[in-house]
Length: 526
Image 1 (tube, rainbow, N blue to C red):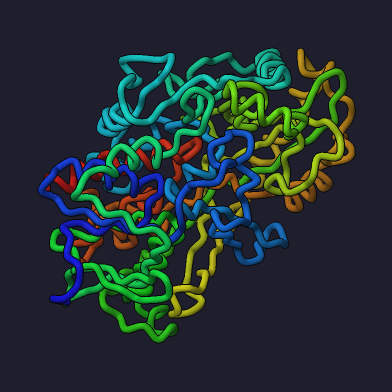
Image 2: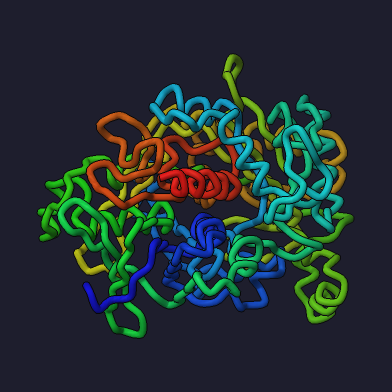
């Protein structure tokens, strides 16, 4: 490899974690940093318009993954993943949620992730954050990641919060405060009404640094090993395979699908599976690709009366208004409000999150709105079921086999049943009821358990939060240690949502950024 390009750090993936690493590591002018991104620039107008995020699904900006048929729903599930600068932070619904204190304490206490308890990670959440409204001791105000109260909130979202409070939830104006529980409006990763991705927050401010090189349309194909040390990355760009050498470390930030896939392609993973694919076993690591889990969601949808629908703004006039003012319905992130609560008594932390949208949003938004509508979705955030990721081929351009095993544990399905019952009750009382015309999906809300169960099976979808496939910890199934170093390999770390041994209770973008902020300190510390 003597004739190859040489850097100190090669980062694979310019997403929610990779952009953070690129900024923090290149802040040292002596550190030569290469950032590889399989996708292209984040140059579509829809990326920057909050309400337009679902229009990016199944475009060139999306990896467009699909799970295997799920045993407990009878269907395959579409999984969007951002394929551009900013990764999923350029395609998500921008909700800023950190998760529950018990999530991180659980990483430490139950998985051996020493140094990752809530008190350990809070400084990194704060370091990242520039909150428009909230401050110390729990929030940051001068970080790169802008977090603000959305510039547009539909009256249906506010009415749902009022109804949820009437139903029995407490009102909250900070889901990331002392208590996560309650109903309220979500804060978003936006700046003055426009999406603020990690490409905006971290990468662009660093692009002028001469020691940072960014390559787009560059898909990593394998980690190059010399013995048990990672020394570089091979990647395809314009059909040509090239190799970049890393004198210090290779850092995988491809996310919960791409990072384990790249480890497997490199001969790092379960030995029997690698041999089945004709891949030489470099390091036998049984946990690679295991522990895959995600937040499943299922919704209740109504048609509405006496109000508007955010989809009404998808007109030339609505776009002009947004472009001139960064206000109006196109400044909506669609999932404007929600709640955290427990479906059964005695839980130490919430197991259910709600996302509500002042429009018809189901089947990932692919259904054209046929009436003005309102969607209320139950999202299971304390997930017992576990699946796995496997290669279908040793060809790095093949998509892997993805199986989150939704509802493999009956407790998950029982919680979703209870969650949807709650949403129906909330819709029937309080301020929201006057706006709801009639049930749209399902066609009636007077459902016995069998009918509700069938609705859940037909209408479960991802909440876009896969984690766990390169889990951090100290047990035999751990892929990385608490410093995020891949076990059995020198010079190689994984830094993204795949290292989370358990998915946090809530949206995963802020926790992924936190992981990368902490990782930057770990890497610089040796």
